[in-house]
Image 1 (cartoon, helix red, strand yellow):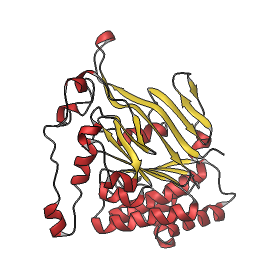
Image 2 (tube, one colour):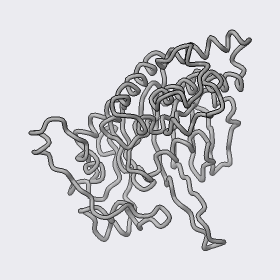
Image 3 (cartoon, helix red, strand yellow):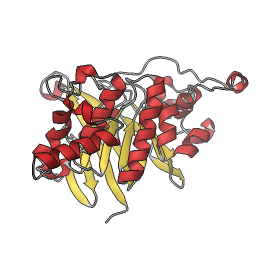
Image 4 (cartoon, helix red, strand yellow):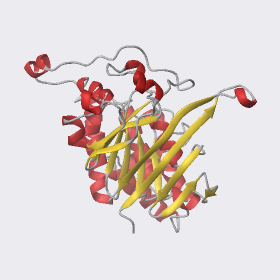
Length: 329
């Protein structure tokens, strides 16, 4: 058994965007991203909309076929694009699951809750008979705070928070080891968000789960994550221990994100300085040369336009990609 359950190396995901031959264009949604996730760990992945977080999660599970890179799961190579090495994903669907962002769009409105949760049990033949199937479904619903009465209802009879719980129960039904949580709280009320995050933590403790927790809300991610990775325009710009990243960010983009976290204490909030970035996020269809962040960075110079910054370990476990780490800190 390897120490890291998930190991990603130089992951790339490009989507065709028109043109022919040499003029063919691609949206570089994920461009050379590498990270590992240890057993029982939660890695948070943050960044503004369109930075490639969701695409990263879906490409890992091969809901999108990767353009490049290598993914090793528990010592087994799931895909290695350069070597044209791919495995049959069906046995790994039991081990790797996803909780989708939109609890309204991710559930089939024509299926009962029991059938939604039971579908994966049927596909993987996990129940010997109907009674065992029913028992597994009720057990999964109970784990997420629902009960047996809910099994015969339809998605339209539930609130957003309850629907998301159904989505989580569906993911848990095959007893996975690794779950990609794709912004599972962004569509929920703030009061419900805290309940769902606490539930994720309890389930992790009970079932020994490993999470890739994708979100754009840093204040939520810092509570559940052991480590946090920050993405900008398809690339990882910083990765560190959760507390370390929040208290000692090194990359200018991370600093801006952290300065936007609301502070409950009015006195502290007044003293804290908000770092507002100028301009808009460039198009991933035509990203800037060199450093992707240079068009909005206060420290950018000619070198930033010419060279892509190297992904380097600044301190033990703290990685960043920036030419001017010393200037920023």
